[in-house]
Amino acid sequence: MTDKPTEGPRAVFEGEIGILARRRIEAGIIAPIYEEMRARLGEEVAQEILDAAIRKAAVAAGEAFAAKTPGGTSLRTFAELQELWTRDDALEISVDKATDTEFDYTVKRCRYAEMYREMGLGHIGHLLSCNRDFMFPQGYDSNIRLTRTRTLMEGASCCDFRYRYEKPEEEPQG
Image (cartoon, rainbow, N blue to C red; front, top):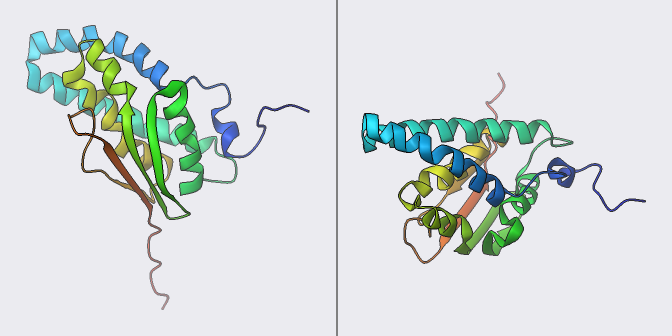
């Protein structure tokens, strides 16, 4: 018998590298491209392009994970994916609530923010990581909504993630 998951939500990320390692690799590739865009187009346009590209990539990543989720997606399967984001001590979090309709947690330490600052990319770290937090769920399951009022990346003392699973109301028959 094997300890490796072969079915269920955890099987979705079997063999996946942690997101922190993935973001470090991506940032190393994106940084010189971003700097060239900034030099040619200006800071504002370069950030707009980066923002749009990262948002599209996050939706596509959500769709790819959804396609690999046995039995379909839910807020619970989404919450199980968080192991990829916390792997390698990437985030220090406390889960406040985890139900079928609510997934609330607070991030007290964010190594993503620390990494981007160390790489000299702190000014675009929110574009490289934080804006994905809203877009990934759209691709994964369109019923998942995020509310967040603050982030460590932008200087707050913590990040407050409040995910809700909101099934659309069925239209009345007749």
